[in-house]
Length: 513
Ligand code: DHE
Image (cartoon, rainbow, N blue to C red; front, side):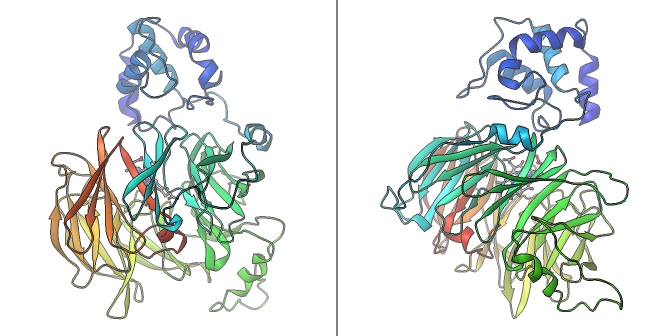
């Protein structure tokens, strides 16, 4: 990708970066920040623009972005000036990017307090779906029984990853790729608080006790703890190794409620971090080392201060992982490698290796039990197949070919079927239905021929399966999960993920947490 960008940049004659910097300050800085850190508009660094090709950026500057505050500049700037601006924003920053606790605090805003604790709608509040529409940066709230949108509101630019719910399902917290964390009260359709926790953010997790939000950042190299009630910043945790001080991007952070901890995957260090989220949790961590006998004289870790870091040293860079149902194990896949490691979080060691080529997407796998054996199943981002793993023996028990590499596999406790997309290949419009009892594909759906189709989520009772046709004039297609017949279509603007409150807060084994 970088090679492609540099080649493209070399084609630009004329304007030097100094001129582009002047144009940037004149036309862009008021929204995107004089140092490109972002403001009302997103941050403009190569790391934040990874999913936008330079040609697309050129069109955006020239024509503006519909349904946003980005105006068109084609009347004010020449085509050459626009190309020069694009090359400028794809240059890495010439100084380290800072976003410290004071900057985070100054971005923090509480917008609503003491709202009524009663839903303003008749729908079952636990059977709501939060649907993220990335086409025009909105969230639609869907009644999971009537299958109707009951509210739609704007979000920050480019939400990504799963929004996370409070344990009672009333509040939901979202993260944008630009580091904006937003807290919504679903009962009142209200934005409660916002804070910018990073410049380039990966995801967030909410602690099992609902008290803390932890944010994982690529830029800067930090984890940021926030008070879940109103997003007040609590602590910035710099991410680096103990000996050399080498810092690392954080690929993702997850909550492990039975352990009372957050677990973070690091992109640039061969370590997994486990962080207890309250003072009471700290002794629990040491006490959980049930199958670990320390060598004589070796001290068990003692947690000190808020959010102490417990390092688990691993042999590889595990920037991608799933937990087993007990949260004692994680399976981590290295993005560069063709294999995955099984890490026992209690003994803090790698205990196995699995042949898992073509890296699964974070949050893509699901769990269920077949003939008494706990199964983990996952599609692969770069290979047209699904792997089924026996989590007792930590062995691959079966692989099946699909019509293309896929992003997400999803199911529900009340259905014998698992649904998996093939959206990463040429046939991006297929959904395979896999029978969890036989581990075979029993049907292939094609809800919108030729159009990108992915990400299934079930209603609270498992009766309906909702999938996204994730194009600008896209739609949600809703199926009867038992008969596999289509029930309804709802138009949406590039719907990405959808999240059912009940399934998420009860950590259904058929979805991500
Ligand atoms: Fe995702 C979840 C990382 C590309 C849609 N994706 C996640 C999570 C991570 C992640 C860390 C877990 C967050 C969580 O829920 O807490 N995603 C990455 C990547 O590294 C990758 C491959 C490249 C990147 O650009 O970051 C990537 N992801 C994509 C897409 O291209 C998708 C399809 C469209 C988009 O919106 O960018 C996409 N990712 C999603 C969705 C989830 C997700 C819908 C939440 C799934 C869920 O059910 O929880």
